[in-house]
Amino acid sequence: MDATSVTTKFLVISDTHGADIPHAARHLPVDVAIHCGDLTEESKIDELRIALKQLQEIEAPLKLVIPGNHDFTMDVPTFKNNIANAPEPLDPALVRTEYGDYGEAKQMFEDMKAQGIHVLEEGTHQFELSNGALLSVYASPFTPSLHDSWGFHYPPEQHNFDIPKGVDVVITHGPPHGVMDFTASGRGAGCPNLFRAVAHAQPKLHCFGHIHEGWGAKLATWREHVGEAPANHFADIDHDESVVVEKLSGLTTTRFDTVASARAKRDRRAALEARGYAAARHGADDERPLRPGQTLFVNAAVEGSTVEFPAHMPWVVDIDLPHQ
Image (cartoon, rainbow, N blue to C red; front, side, top):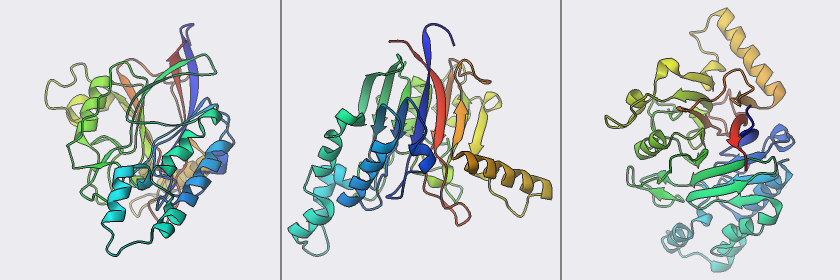
């Protein structure tokens, strides 16, 4: 690490869906904790209270949160639309008891700023960290969907992500198209517009969730002339110079595994579960330091995607940030 940078430790989680944030994640000292959305399953006010209580327990001086599509009460226009278009008229008192008043969910998070918890609006944010680093973040809770009952939705390919060049970290709920976004059906469900924006900005870290089956991390090396053709992960990422740090297929046995490969996967998974988190260390003092022209992509969805894998591990990431 040179004198102009500070190695900074991030805890990254997403898609807890009302379940407990893993114990190891809550009690591992880090510089910054990030939750990439879907704190709840049904956006009920009690789910949000529990999520906030657990966020308070995380040992980080700064905790950055964006909502996800399940957290629809934090998207007030969608919340109002859902109530107005319910199949049968709803009792307002019951709605308030279960979901809170309009704007109450968001205000709960606003009231926690003094404890270091910040719910981020879409856009760019700057933070001075207690470790002496300066952090710039672009955040967006928006994901593509054809169902207008979800929070922070937009019709596919009809949202622009104004990510500035030089931003350190991008936090979105959903993935970019082609990167840690493959569903169980084998379809890439990420957003092409988001990929284009990230490809041009080339942040140090882009973290997200939403697609549970896409859990994992990839250190991507960008090609020299990004965007000369229509932006996509085949044209713009040099896959020969990129590294998959971890993904579910590397931890899950199949009928195609040999005895040796199945044992290796089980041993690898057992080691990660014993530690309690997956790690991607790319500070200057680490084995594979992050270079200009590289982005570490992390899908940190905690809720599992299979019977064999009912929960995924949180991520701990080290990257270098500029001094204040």
